Length: 406
Image 1 (tube, rainbow, N blue to C red):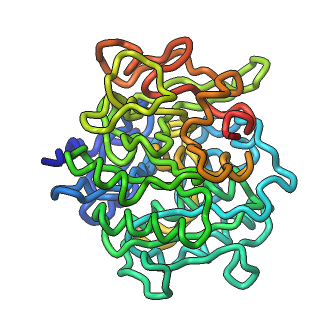
Image 2: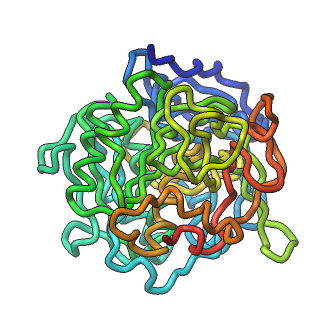
């Protein structure tokens, strides 16, 4: 039976200087698992039924967040706090000229965000990125079957959609974006949306959702995620040590999370394990041939990682909900679309290839994350950072695009 995710904690008392924000309906407030100086809410309610997924977006509601060069107190609907495109491109040495032009990154989420295109326009204009609209052919939104029939709107998933669209734009400003909206958050509907994204030509598909594993997962693997030549990224989870599906699928790149801060080193930045990042051994999925770690007899999560700590969160513009405007988000919902966009920057995977294996052939082109943890476990590498592979950060974070080429 599919296990439900851990319930979120009650809202922590905000610091006197922090601005309290309203908690969306049916969403519990929770302190960030990464640092006491921010509080967050989950954009999507914890699933209570088998085969229903939850998005992995965590919205910062109070405290201070690490911006590019300093700590900044969060304010809502004002100028953006959190990392923007220039910081993310610099941290991960991503090309920002014409790279990614002509490539389409697909975002798969549940329910409709009626303001998706308009909010994306606001984000891109703020940071001087070129317009990405339906009219100029850069942006396209479809329902799960690929038609113009869209599902009902949902404020929580709309936040997730805004986060996903903005992160693809930040990492790959020249990429086209395809948004496929599933009718509900069931694995069947989300999986159908994945198949639609691939059928419409996307070679890079991001999935920022997850739920407990079940014996049905290997069936879902073959039905929805086995797409040779397509890079499919999935959030590893936001509950710390423990494994979720579809991150546990052998056919996807499971994306963990880090805390990202500026530093006085050669790189200018440093990543440490974010305590909320999911990791561990799959109970059902077979180990892919490119994974050589010995602590899991089956699939190990994660593969690679990027920023996910809400305390070092990213700027997002969203207006469909109770607190419209500029907001700060974290969660592995941020890292999954970032990595999908990095795959797009790296170039089209060859026909029949397994893009999830690419980073394992180019480990020297990643930033190794050697400190931090997401819990207690044995063997310890499954939950603690260290030299080489570890569970929460996988092989590390992007250092350019070379690790994501075939």
